[in-house]
Amino acid sequence: MKRFLLIAAVLTIATACNSKVNETSWSKTISGDMTTTNAESGEDFVDTANVIIATSDITKPFLNINIEGVRFVAMMPEVNFELANVPFKLYPSDDRNDPLYGSWAVAEDAIVPTVGGVSREEYTLHNFRASIFDDGVTLDFDVNFGGVIFHARFGKNETLQSWEAEFNASATVAINPGEQAMTSTDDLKVLFFQPNLSKQVATITFKDIRFVAMMPEITFVLKDVPFSYSEDGSSRLFNVATIVPAINNAPMEQYTITQLRGTVTNSAMLLDFKMEQMNASVSISGY
Image (tube, rainbow, N blue to C red; front, side):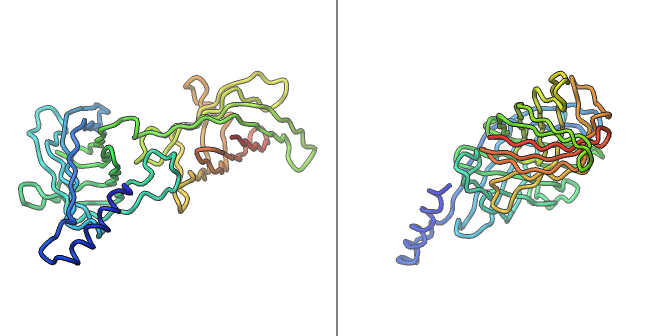
């Protein structure tokens, strides 16, 4: 992406020197799979599509995005969605290890596409998210088709759509905090998995955790944990009132977690939470 900005600067100078030259336009065509999920039935449909990203002036933060060959079900004829003047920002991260470092990011609540030159409000794309980077494009949006909501995802490179990190961590557990507290410390592993970079939810796994010394080691899984990004995009911030962990895919309400707070980067993590039924406070840090 940095080379695009350099090209923009060079072309701007060239344009200033020769008013007849205007080469600040740029475009990219990506072919890949589009997966659409029927929100009612949960069924997936996968088909190929082309995404064309273009701008007439790369010094301005607007893109034209054409999605060619869109189908939500097998019997649907192919439709081309044209999205004009979509605003974008530089992906908010200065972490060179982030898969989307240096990319362009789009986040719009609703975009009305043009189909065949006609604006089609019935095909409004909701929760539209896109990432445009050197090697590909990812798209994520919801659309109402035939009275059914479909969730669509497009991506050329599946590995660039997810994020995961594993930490060697230490858990400090205080039972009856503030009274006759009983404190213990134990080592564990903490795994984070964000299956789709355009969806701000993650799975957190506490592997081999225990809350008192005589307790056997268990593995907790917190599914679909929402988070936000820090202002610079380098950290994932967790702030969840209540969540029920699972053990072997079974929800364990007796271990309900409250006041989950934490910060996670690619190199460090810190989480704090309470387990009210055990009257316990837990703090976990790792690198």
